[in-house]
Length: 254
Image (cartoon, rainbow, N blue to C red):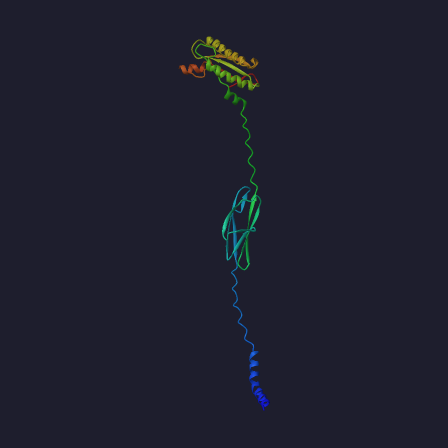
């Protein structure tokens, strides 16, 4: 009797067991897919140079900008996202800017700075050749005398010493010393006075080392005045030993 009751109880519970077993193996629906991540905006890069052509030793300024970038490099070196930089390349150089966004996408821009050799310096100016006659006029000075005198006074000594120095440095130059007088006195007397003045100047130059063979003398007395006014200042200008350069033909060059 007890066995029968157990069998009946088992048979009665079988549908419930089968239902519970079926419920345990039922599949759940899959979870929804994750929302797609928005792509980072593409980067941009731009670079310019001012000027783009320089001479060696000069400078150019690079200026660059970027957008949507997290890093920027200039010829491989990290730089600010936007900026400028002065460069002085010794040879023509390309400068490349690379901008990278957060996704690793890149944009690039480049500019070339052309370097040229500076022009050679201009040649020095050719030395100015001053004619001998002009150098003679610049360096030779007359000796002046007191009234009715032919002795070499102080200022005349200084003038003749400078003359002697230049003549010794230019041994190819021969000279004529002209004796001159003011208008007072006879022509004959002044002719002799002029001769004494010319020879006094010649003797002083020879004493200073100028070869006597290079010096001729002549007297013009009062016949060739440098000034024609009847004043003491004018008379003084005419009382002189006037030194001129002798030309190859034996004449004088004023």
